[in-house]
Image 1 (tube, helix red, strand yellow):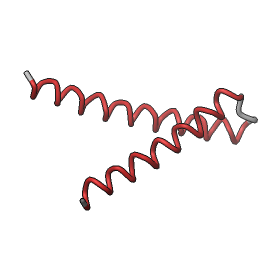
Image 2: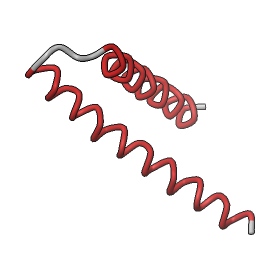
Image 3: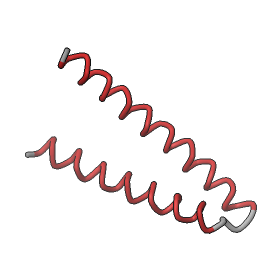
Image 4: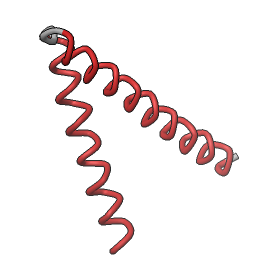
Length: 64
């Protein structure tokens, strides 16, 4: 049962990362066409910070 929970958590993490990547791409295209709304700009910044933190945590887990 624990293995099933870990597998579902890993799958959900991958799906969350992929959906954030697609939304970030959408926001970048929108940013080129017009100025982003306050909510869109906030999401743009939050996703970039989240990717940075994810990369740092991944590097720490690999090298530590």
